[in-house]
Length: 173
Image 1 (cartoon, rainbow, N blue to C red):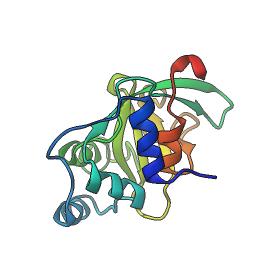
Image 2: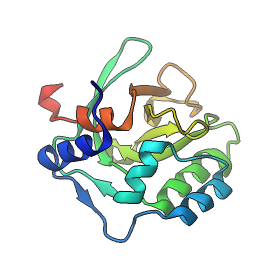
Image 3: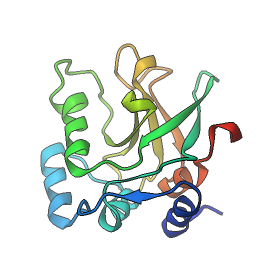
Image 4: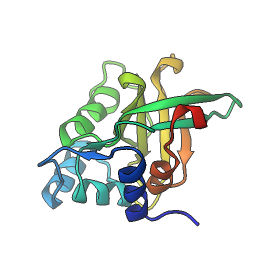
């Protein structure tokens, strides 16, 4: 059975030293402003995290496994579990709407977190709020920056709670 969001947050608190940055939760005006600026919608589970916790992260046991379509497997470490409003919008502008390369990243994704010292990104579908899957974009192995090649955006979990619940120490992967 897939964990619900409350169970997943409890898991993070018990196993990963889950931490919240004060005064970063989102209100309805923030969600509306995000949609106005990006044309995207925040997925349901991510919206719940942003409403309840805002910018949050983990201190340890925050590694995850990525299995790419080409069969390769790699272990990555979360840097920022869920970013703040300004960073989420800024990453959209950097890679999608305001990129100096207009076709750099064409997928309608919400950049909500980062991994690998900020060289990789955690993404969710920005068009279908009911698609709760979490994707990973390892920018360094995506030379064209499109998110569309074999090492582009890779699905790592069917839901945000599942992604949270799968975080562990690198030795366990």
